[in-house]
Length: 244
Image (cartoon, rainbow, N blue to C red; front, side, top):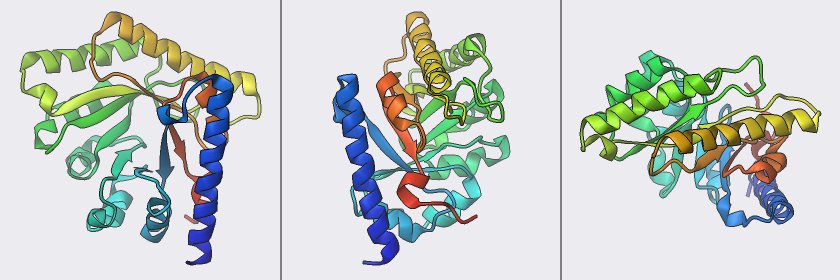
């Protein structure tokens, strides 16, 4: 085993322990939390090391990088899922639909409509997440709950327009990025804003698969779990500092 593989093994074990401890503090079960390894800027060899240590969910920010890394290698990581977690450009939708199992970070009605117009190309139900801007000024996301409601209305209209459409796509939940800060109160408020948005959507719409909160990264995932995250996105704490 290489030094990098050993380090990834140790890092995954440590992250899992920290998840368990955070769940104990929050009165939750660790089985409620999906651990995503954010593999952007890391080679496929590192992905394999994470996979061999139990990781089955991977996240990539860029369609082209993900395509070069995963298009010919998925058979080596069976029973895994690949999520697009960065901003998806409309001109990359076709390629994204060919590769990803889920697209997080949908932050505009225009991007949503581009996906809906092509989603029947997907061989299984594509899972999508809407991103809400909750505090990281440099990051994308729907700006407020009204904008989220508009996206939900567009999605609802698509699903209701044909009984076939629900076979192609599912709205799974919401995602966000908290501000990168040491101020715990600001981080918690960011996550609580996402939790509140999910409750508002559930009160107004009835999406049967809408049950996920993707929030929390290497620096704040324990707080995210305490606030209700169901999926945490961990890059550096698993793979180490990225070499661009």
